[in-house]
Image (cartoon, rainbow, N blue to C red):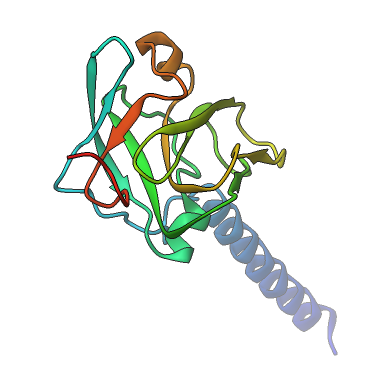
Length: 168
C-alpha cells in the first residue's frame, strides 16, 4: 500500500468515526425523542382536603406497564395544575423511585375509595425506594412540595373515574 493511499484510507476512517461520535452525542442529548406520549385524562383529578377545599388537576395517564415505568422521566418542569395518575387494577403495596426524573415530585399514594394513604416528596435522580403505607389502588404525582403548600394530607379524598371505589 502506498503512503498516499494509506493516508486517504486513514482520513476516511477517521471521518466516519467522527460522524458516528457526533451522531451519538446528538442522540444522547435528546432524551425526549421516542418517549411515550401519555394521554391526557378527559376527567380532572379532584382532591378534597379535610377543611373542604377542592384542588383540581389535569393529569396524564400512565396505564400500561411501559407508561408506568417511564412516568415523568426527563421532564424539566411540571405546572402546578398538572400531574400524572397511575391507576392500578388491584390494590397492592407500591414503591416508586426517581431514576431519570429531573424534578422533585410529590408521590401521593391512594387507597381504594380514594383516601390518601401517604405522601412522599421525592428528590430527583435517585434510586431510593419510596413505598406506600398499605395497599393502594392509584398513585398521583404532582410538583414536589405542592401537596404541602395546598394542605393536601393523608386521609384527604382523591376523585377520578379510574380510582376504584372513588367517591363521585
